[in-house]
Image (cartoon, rainbow over all chains, first blue to last red):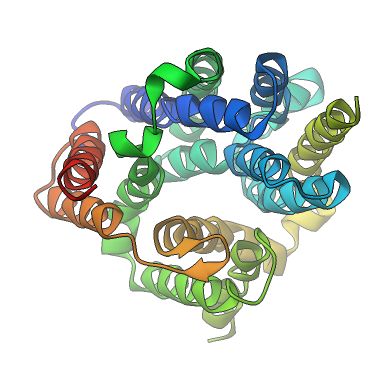
Length: 220
Length: 103
């Protein structure tokens, strides 16, 4: 996958992930309007919250007629993993002042995954920025399209979009998992923890809890 | 109006959570234990996310056959060293076709 310079392969990874995952904005726009949000509300969430899982969670809770305070708290819990990503990206990006304030908005699953997949620090920065910009533009445009076109689009699940997210993360992790048995242990333990915790804990918590998988490897 | 307040709170909170990690004090980030933890934790979270998005539905364990087959197609494509977009396309295509046939 990498015959070219680290920088150009980072750009390619970023564009690929940004465009592919960005398409799921259609699903969010459609889900939000179906749940009872108006088009402006769906778009503001994509522009300013810009973290897919939390956005889906709020829309889902509104649709189910749940308590708004609980819905917001649950959605925030899903966003808490971005804090842990930030700890890692702080080192790689090494930004200050206004640049850091701008970069912070892009600290999400996809940008972290692409940045970590790059072999050099320079590549990681390029990968982060490319993914952030591509995904931000695509996600917001497709949110608008999905929100406006709900009725004509039908069910986005029919397009197989729900598998694109997991497949993206797997594809990005793959080369590192193949090379490092230690990372495979972290990944498999993380999966097991999250699945085991899912029936008992509110959404968002199982994924956070999977961070404990790191301790298993660190203690050995 | 209340929904707008919930949206405003979520947007502000999500941004604050993102910034909190990125703006953690140097002293904390340079601590060897924090450093090792931060280095490995995205792998655990992303792997957990794959598992949760694939095999749970609204708080229960649940295997969706078309989606699982789509991920299997992605694994096959990865083993064949297919390019990234081909991996995603094969996953989405398999899932969509199976939904069309079964649903």
